[in-house]
Image (tube, rainbow, N blue to C red; front, side, top):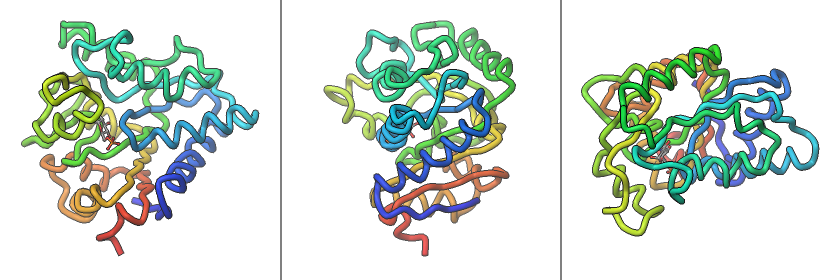
Length: 242
Ligand code: GLP
């Protein structure tokens, strides 16, 4: 595990964007695993800026996103497909046919999850997976559980996650109760993993996840065992990591 200590959110975003741009420059047809949430927004902003300056080309890049709310599609403002278009895809020269997100509108969970795992497999796996960290230690929507999950699956969101994500909705009641998410095994099989974390509210979970025991009760802790994991965090998030 490598830790990059950033000064603040903007610095964290630039540092992580540097890693991703190096990946895309060295391998233009990279498979990028992408994440949603407020943490990676600055990374996308920076990548868009470099693309607009002519320093980055996404025309051959393929992407797979971590997760999507069940019952949500592109017409829903809070869907992750909409998030990705608004925050990233609509501003770069990516071929939308090469982007992948679980289809929240497919009610058949078994079919959707095996379809998504086949997509990842057909792409030959993920070169670099970008991650955020849930306040309860989740990655993607892999919630604290008794065991680590394997492939893409449907998950019932924990109360902590519903509370944390309600800021994007009118109320907690409007937050979907379930989601499709890549499994821990899908994430761990990515060649490189990069996590962005910012702010003092995440300081305790950063300590538990990366300086505590590896346990499915803190899903992100499994990344301690990944052979190429970089944590890019700001000073506030690293408060307990000296
Ligand atoms: C959501 C996403 C996660 C993300 C997490 C943290 O639950 N499914 O992928 O990492 O939120 O979000 P934020 O970065 O806004 O704290």
